[in-house]
Length: 128
Image (cartoon, rainbow, N blue to C red):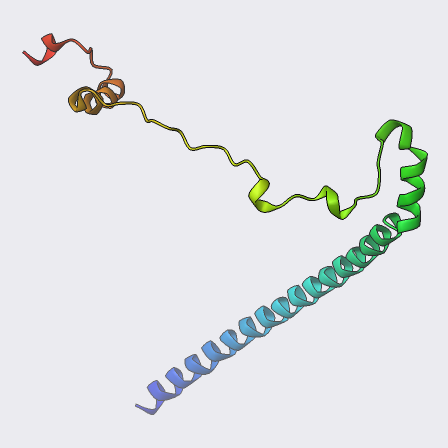
């Protein structure tokens, strides 16, 4: 009986050692993946900071004013004034359709889709 217990204990210890070995390497792989993702996030934040700086540089008011003056003949850009804006009640919204298509015979409408799906002929000879 002791021999069976020793063998079962040894098998359990070897099994747990194998499990711990696999978990250790799985954890190391997960940590490596997390470090790689953090490095990618840092690089993306750095690129985003450069893009924001470039956007701010390209959209400087004095640069935009000079570009508007330089291209005035072609674009005709003028400064906006408050009088150029309208009120919401001045907006002309499109009118909804006044009338839907009339349904003259509901049976024709309900079988129209069925005939198109089945490829049936619209003649009534098929039903007789």
